[in-house]
Image 1 (cartoon, rainbow, N blue to C red):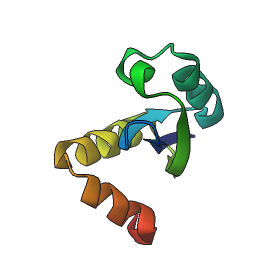
Image 2 (image 1 turned 180 degrees about the vertical axis):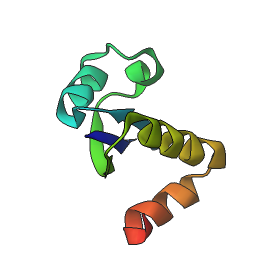
Image 3 (image 1 turned 120 degrees about the vertical axis):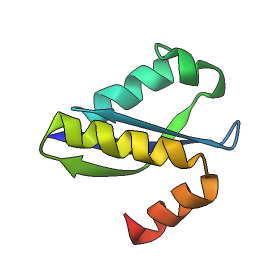
Image 4 (image 1 turned 90 degrees about the vertical axis):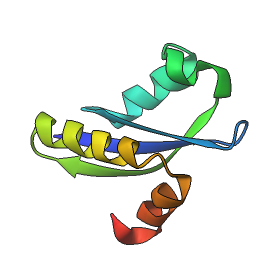
Length: 82
């Protein structure tokens, strides 16, 4: 199983979208500062995730969401439209 996840930083008021096989371990890495893209806005909380059977499906969904470049779209997804 692979997951596309959405994190949120209260500190910066930003969302981050990623994918991983183990969401809990990945969140720990984000909050420990091992991920350059999220290092400055720690801590992050997990806002939502969606499961996929194939890694390529998860990658495609992550890219689709990131291409939208919209916090409003992410909030719409988190409101149950995902």
